[in-house]
Length: 240
Ligand SMILES: [Mg+2]
Image 1 (cartoon, rainbow, N blue to C red):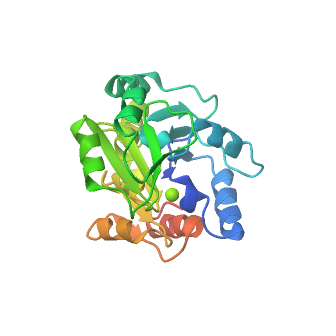
Image 2 (cartoon, helix red, strand yellow; image 1 turned 90 degrees about the vertical axis):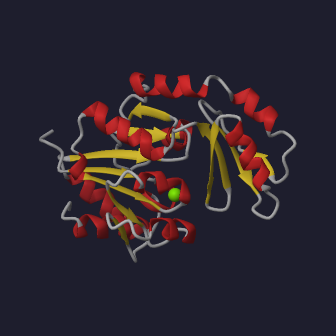
């Protein structure tokens, strides 16, 4: 590859996978036709989901995958962990899965997500039943607690999220920060926008995310949903 002209670091659900089928097709074809794009999937999904996704016909192959809400980083070709970053995440997590599940076993409004966890524990939560004390308890135990889309509660190693892990990847791979576009639609994408890299909150973003990025003049709030919002931002930032 020539020097990357675009590093697209995008959330999946609601963002890269959002919008109309026609808009997705158009974006995926445009990306696949270029030889100067580094594609990074940055998602709350686990690797099993992403493996199936990249086998879907017409889906552009990611160069890197930041999965599990920033707690997993693998090469998009062979799914091998990027050892330097993955090791640091594992150290911060300290094999805490069992401890976290025990800590939260009796908390109201939580339901464990059915996935294999590496360096996180994630729940579905009921906004009407979740108590602020539950979040405080997680933080007091030395973890970060991330609420997103009024649905997902993630317990993460302190200081680890999509944004910080993406920055580590950019540094480790020597990617050009001024050619990066981050894209997302829910609060678990906020850390991507806090990096101050160019960004787009797509048109279907949750209201709490839009409130949180108000005043971030490096983030474009697109009127277009999902993939169309990404295409809109590529034009706006001259990255198309
Ligand atoms: Mg999303």
